Length: 69
Figure 1 (tube, helix red, strand yellow):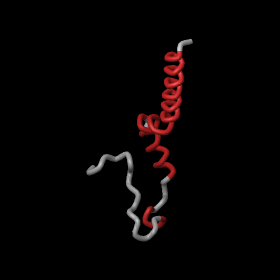
Figure 2 (figure 1 turned 60 degrees about the vertical axis):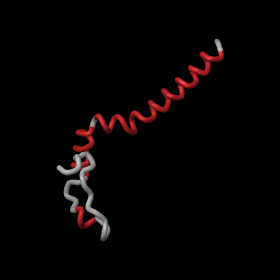
Figure 3 (figure 1 turned 135 degrees about the horizontal axis):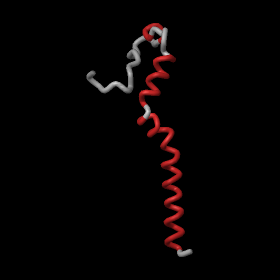
Figure 4 (figure 1 turned 90 degrees about the vertical axis):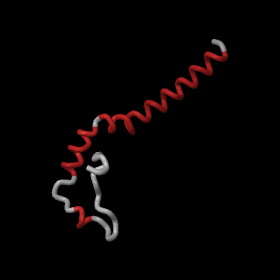
C-alpha cells in the first residue's frame, strides 16, 4: 500500500469517526425535534416554572421555538 493511500485512509477514518460521534449528539435531535418536544412536554407536565426557578433567573423558554414567535 502506498504512503499516500495509507494517509488518506487514516484521515478518512478519523473524519468518519468524528462524523459518527456528532450524529447522535447534534444531527439526530435536530432532525427529530418533534420527538424531543413530546418528551419534554411529558417531563414538564404539572411543573410551575416560577416555583422552581431561582430568584432573578429568566423563566425557561422553548429552545425549539423560533425567536419572535
